[in-house]
Amino acid sequence: MNVSEAEDLELVDEEIPEEKNNKITTIFHVLFKGAALFMYVFAKWFTTNFVITFVVVVLLVAFDFWTVKNVTGRILVGLRWWNEVSEEDGTNKWIFESRPDGKHVNASESRIFWLALILTPIIWIAFALTALFSFQFQWFILCCVAVTLSGTNLWGYYKCRYDSSSAKRALANYAVGFMASV
Image (cartoon, rainbow, N blue to C red; front, side):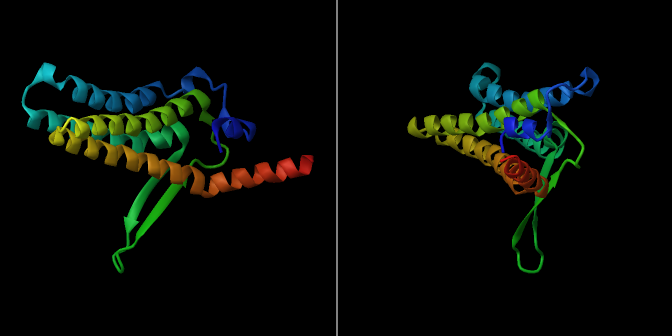
């Protein structure tokens, strides 16, 4: 289900009063991603020590991972995910939360959330390929860490959006409504 379909189902509000916008949350959603990418690209302006650059970029990517997973996803799109490992047999179980019925999502904040979430791993993959083909393996490892964390968030939110029970209910309601109108 894309944003326009969600708008049709009244899950997304086009017009939310100014006081209900989450501008600071949206800024932090983009800030950590941008800061990590900026530090990766312009690290030589600040230091020639790769270890410092590596640590700073990994910390920024980790801050981004935690912020997106636990804060901005819940506030901006009403979704949250986590993965639990069973102590008995070691199997993974994905757990999803979605905004309770009756709570709406701001369409512009949702678009910013998904755009940043999707573009970040693509950019890190491009940097990883550049580092790999230019034989800069230490930079490649750094990019792999960033791809892993940003890609995990993307995968978690993708599964959360399409596997959550409220998304399935909304899609079922849409289908029932569509069939009733035919």
